[in-house]
Amino acid sequence: MTKDLRYPDALIADVLRSVKTIALVGASPKPDRPSHEVMKFLQALNYRVIPVNPGLAGQVVLGEMARESLLAIGEPVDMVDIFRRPEAVAPIVDQAIAIKAKVVWMQLGVRDDAAAAKAQAAGLIVIMDRCPKIETARLTAAGLL
Image (cartoon, rainbow, N blue to C red; front, side, top):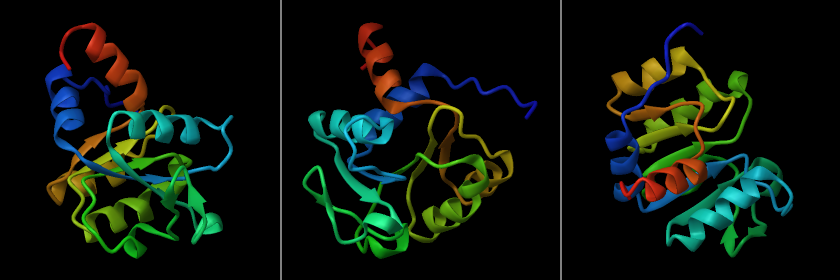
């Protein structure tokens, strides 16, 4: 991982302004888990957040039915937010491409350069090793959101 991961604030702000529906892969029903906290935060900002976790499929998490996979969502998704280990990213990116998501966002500590290149080649915006909750707070404080 030698490539520098600097993203222009304008790009991140544009993504956060333009997306409406987010599939959160690796969602947890446990309030003490970061994925749960981020999902709740994004919902408070009026994003529709669809939890994706095969172990929770069919259960309700924060008012939304959890899905087994991105392919099981069956409706348009703007952004795929990935809360999974880097080695799990490639098949998630393949599904994000298949459902025609616009953005793949990998959470803090999550990076897969090959999967990112594949997503970008398919026309998706990719942000790695960032948290939309942290970026929203930072850009709001800076007056950019």
